[in-house]
Amino acid sequence: MWVLFLATFCGLGASLTAVDNLGQIGESLGYPNKTVTSFVSLVSIWNFFGRVFSGFVSETLIVKYKVPRPLMMTLVLLLACIGYVLVAFPMPGSLYVASIIIGFSFGAQLPLIFAIISELFGLKYYSTLFNCGQLASPLGSYIFNVKLTGFLYDREAMKDLAKKGLTRSSVKALTCIGSHCYRLPFIILTFVTFFGALTSLILVVRTRNYYRSDIYKKFRENAESL
Image 1 (spheres, rainbow, N blue to C red):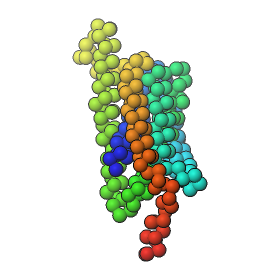
Image 2: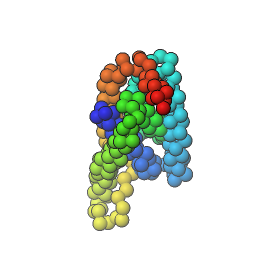
Image 3: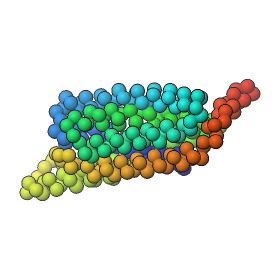
Image 4: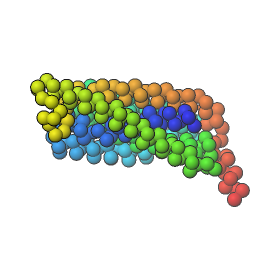
């Protein structure tokens, strides 16, 4: 469970941080408000597609090819890394692609996490384990969003003020404009998510024999006993 918790902490924590800051990222890169709204909409739309895709594809891979479901989690986290790199090193229009990738990977993680919990640990303590999995999400978001991204963004904004000869008391709110504003935070988020992907590979190795067997046998036996 600790392996899954750590992968969830890294994966969902980084994804929530990216989603929460997407509007401000668009503003810092000079996109108009109408376009920034489109980025947020793209995240929501592809979040849905990610949920449907990961559930359907991972189930098909298990039934037909006995592929461990945690491997799908690894691939999704690696995909998220691409989205974060596009934010850290933006090109013209790249934020559109980043929004799609981040939204898709964020949505894809949730069904996988809860399906993995039920398959590996059963349903007897599912509600407790479910909430443990849920805890990793806001915890990761708080650390990566508030303590990391927010702090580094404010630091870059203060540097911009200093270049203009202004102090913090001269402005109501700190605002940073430019590609440098979110570069370091998203480089760190990329490495954090990559570490989460490597962590999930541990789960792949440890569960490969289990997923080669009939993983739904115990659920059928429980249903028949009722």
